[in-house]
Length: 74
Image (cartoon, rainbow, N blue to C red; front, side, top):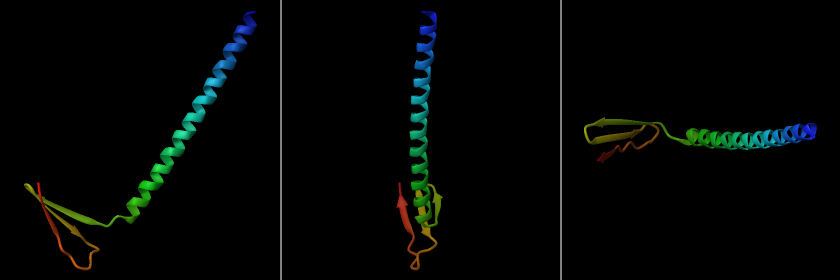
């Protein structure tokens, strides 16, 4: 009787461990997919310079052939 309880408890703990590993694998895949998406976005982004003075921001894109800085007031 005690052996059956121990075997049942062991089987339940193994099943729980397998479920936990599956959830961790799924989370890892999701994180890796998000990381690839963010890296792709970073590769597509254009280098900019943001100069701030008080409430004024000047944003300059260095790759723009016709530089027209944007002045943003907040």
